[in-house]
Length: 464
Image 1 (tube, rainbow, N blue to C red):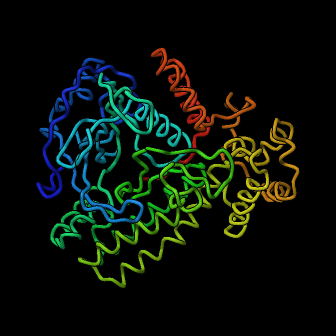
Image 2: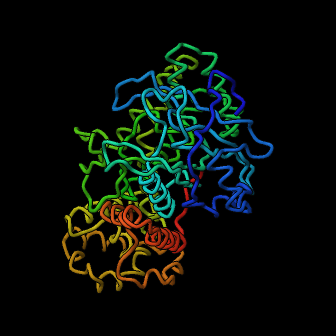
Image 3: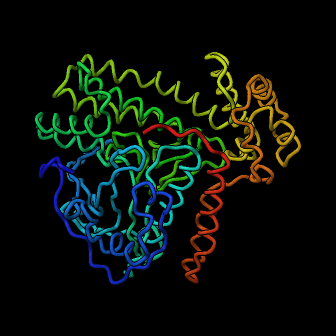
C-alpha cells in the first residue's frame, strides 16, 4: 500500500506461543501464486507473518472511523488486524489484499487484546465458504492458525482457544476510511484516497469528467449487487456498520452472522442488535444509509447535486440486482423486465407462504432450473408446501422461464433429498467435537460438501 503514513501505521504481529495450521484455502492460494508453499512456509507467513518476498516490508494497521449502529466513533482502526501483503491475481493482474484478524494489538486496539477466538475463526471460514458457494461477492478465509492462548470472552465459554485468521479480498478500504479524513476536514487526503481507489480498482473511471460522482456511482452499484446477493442467499450479516463495508462491494468480517431458517424479514443475527437495525429485511436500508455517509464525505471534494444523483441511483440498481440475483439462484434465464419482476415477487411470496416449514435453502434447491425440476420438487419431501395458492402462482410463472445451463442438474448433488444448509444449529454442532476432543473431521467434511455445492450450483459470480 503506497498511500503513506496518514492511512496506516506499521505494526508487528503478536509472538504467539504456538502455530497450528487448521485451514488453508489452496484454491484461493493458487490465484495469488502461493499454493506451492509447504505447511512450514505457510505457518511462517500466516502464523508468524514473516514478510512475503518482494512485498511490503511489514504489516500496516489501517486507519478509519465509522458509524457503529449509527453512532459515530472516531476511535476506530485495525484493532486486531493489519494489512499483511498485496499480491496480483493470476490471469487478471488485479490487486488482492491479505489481511488478518486476531494478529495482536495495534495502536487502535483501545482496551482489546487484539486476539480472535478459534471458534470465531471457524465461524468465519464457514461463512465465507458458504457465501462463495451461493454466488455472493465475499472475502475468502485464506488461512486459520491456532495460536495456543487462552482467551476470556463474555459471549462464549471461557477460557477459550485462540487463532489468527488471514482473509483474501480485493480491498480493505472501507467507507470509514473516507469518514476519517472527512472528520478531520482533509480534502487533500480524501482526494488522494479516491484517486488511489480509481487507479487501483476502477481504472475505467479514469476519464470520468466528474470523478467524485462517478466514483460514488460505482460504489453504489457494487453495494446494491452485494446486498441483492445477501437477500437471495438468505444471509444476515449482523453488523452493517460503515467500517464493515468496503468500496469494492465485497462482503467481509463475519461476526454474529446467520443464514435464514425461513423467510422472516425481522430475523436478526446479533444478540446485541436489540432494535433489529440490521435484521434481514432492513439490510438494503442499512446499506443505503451507509452510502449516504460516504456521499457526505465526498461533498468535501465533489459537487453535492451530482453526488445526490449518484446516491439516488441505489434503489433502481438494487431492484435490478435483486432480479438478476433471484434468477441466478433459481437457475433460469431472463425473459423481459415485467415477467422477471413478477417472478421475483412471486418467489418471495411463496417463500413466505410456507411459513417456518418452508426452509429457505431447500426452496431454491427444489426449484433450481425451473421446469426442469418440476417433477423433483413436486414429488420430493416438500411437495405439500408447493400446493398453496402463492406457491402455485410462483410455479405458473416459473413455467415460462427457460432453464439456464440445465446440465448442472446432472450433478449428483441434485439427486439428494436435501441441500447443503448452514444454519446456526449445525455451526454449533460442528464446533462441539473440536472443543471437546479436538476432532476437526466434521468441519472438514462440511467444508468439502460446501465446495461440492459450489461446483454443482456454478452460480454466476458478481464482478468485483
